[in-house]
Structures are given as C-alpha cells and as structure tokens.
Image (cartoon, rainbow, N blue to C red; front, side, top):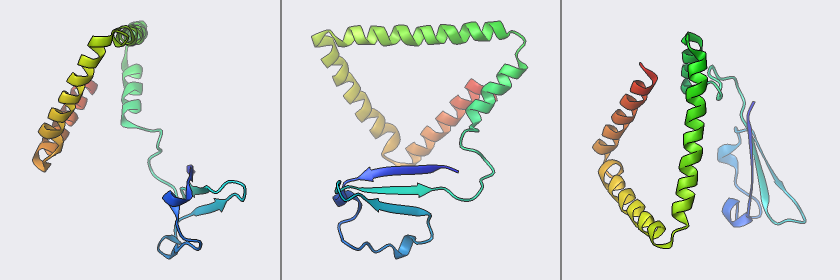
Amino acid sequence: MASVSATLPPPLLLTQRKPNLTSIQKLPFSLTRDRRNPSMALMVKASGKSSESSTDLDVISSIQNVWDKSEDRLGLIGLSFAGIVALWASLNIITAIDKLPVISSGFELVGILFSMWFTYRYLLFKPDREELSQIIKKSVADVLGQ
C-alpha cells in the first residue's frame, strides 16, 4: 500500500474554514492541522490491489531478462562500470566548463534556443506530439532489442 503526504500552506490547499469535501469523500485521505503551524498536512493512502506493482517496470524487467540470458556477465559488469565512469567524467567536464564565465552563458543561450525549437517542433501541435511518441517508442524498442 502506498501513501503520499504533503504539507501545504493554507492558501494553496484550502482558503475556507470549513472545506467542502463532498465531491471527494470516497477517497481515503486525512487532513490534519497543527495549532502551532498554520500549514495543513494532507495524507493520501492508496487502497485496493493492483495487478502491476509500481516497482515492476518494463525497464527493470528488461534488464533482468538481459542479465539472465547473458553468457558474458563479466562483460556486462565491465560495461556498467564503464558507463558509470563515463557519467562521472562527463559531469566533471560539465562542472569545469560551467566555471568559465563566457562559455556557460553561451551554453545557457543554446539550451534556451534548443528548448524553444523542441517545444515548437514536437510539443505544440497534436500530430507532432504523436510523431514524438512514435520516435520514443521506436528508440526504446531499438535499445531494448525488441
């Protein structure tokens, strides 16, 4: 059973003294208020059983399948280690570049321009979003070997 709790300031959660909660009475939640702190806490618990666990993702099961079917596990361990080292090295390079005053501003400008182009190209219109979804599904299938 999963649960989520959040503490929100009063204007974000409820602005009235007596909240009107008739539309969500069927949901298992509790609303608490501390007298010392004016913020409210909201606790929601998931109920019912699901056929699919939240930790049983397709990616994790695919990795387990690759691990089980692999004959060269030492090679997989070495490849994983090399990937972690490459990630660490790239983060250090990015940190070093970020310390240079002119280059970091240029990269920020390039990032903003690319984000604007990506939003216009793939996210603004529905056919483009569907195209992006197809590209992502194809790429995931290629990576996982399906």
